[in-house]
Amino acid sequence: MRKFSEKISWWFYQREYIQNTQIDDLTFGLEVILSNLLSFITITIVGFMIGDPLKTILFLIVFIIFRTIRDRYHAETFLACYILTLCSFFIPLLLSKYIVFNQTFLVLNLVILNGLLLFIFSETLNEPKKRQQFINFVTASVVYNLIPLFLLVVNQFDYAIFLSSLGTVVVFTAIKGPKGS
Image 1 (spheres, one colour):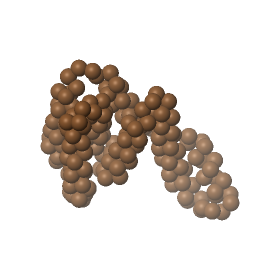
Image 2 (cartoon, one colour):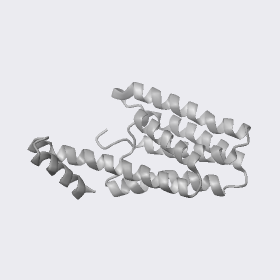
Image 3 (cartoon, rainbow, N blue to C red):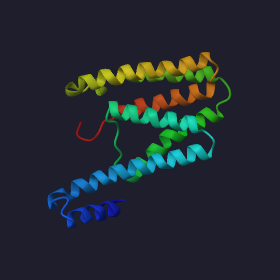
């Protein structure tokens, strides 16, 4: 991915669309974009192939919304980022498919865990310069965690498990912010 991004950057430089000092920035930006595209394309293809388009779409919506609200954990490499993103999708998906007993108990415990994590790590999440981001994240998390509870009431257990476990992934990845923060 790095080499491909570098080639594109050099192509822009040779055509005088960018300056020499912008090559590294463009290369990095292209790597981020390509990494996200590759992750989202893989998740979309696999999600649709295994017959779970709604959970796939829900994951992408939740991932993008919470990524926008709070700049979350960043892996050391783009490969590690790709793997973590895929795991963030597949773990909740597998839980929702294969947990067939005590579904209500699991969802309730995950929602409680999500709330406890927000409370326990509120100091870590609440960076002084990003107070509004913290408020938005907590508000979105609380509202989001009401959705699995509603889904329990309407007997949509597999979606409740999927969204509550995805909520746990979102909270865990929000605890450790980007490098330098």
